[in-house]
Image (cartoon, rainbow, N blue to C red; front, side, top):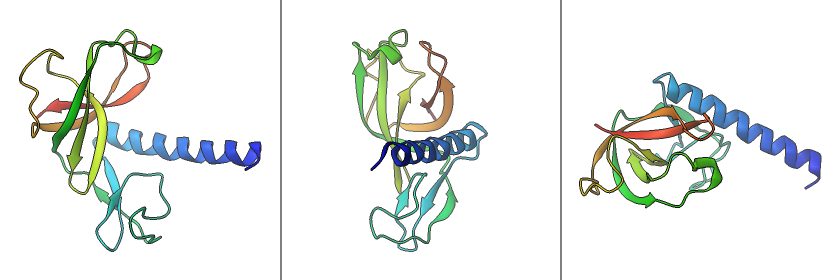
Length: 137
């Protein structure tokens, strides 16, 4: 892939992500669903499971469930001022999202698998960039 094509693909991905996080920030989060019921996140043009190009926007469920998490004590520079923090993967219907779990202390024993969470958009302490955030429901 030539440099200009790679840059174009990166820009398209970034634009799709920005539109998705804007919608999530506005309380209008969504995912893409194939006719087979597979869910994925934009930017997608093809279902990664069945290959269908007939993808429909569906509203993101209001709550999800924490499937796994890790406490990050030694962060990358992007999250230097946010540490320690909890990164979690939560299931929201047919999709999984990765985000930072806030509203719990990283050393709390109350972070249980199966914890119900809501999803939103907040800012990183380190660089004020937007990120996906979960909070206990």
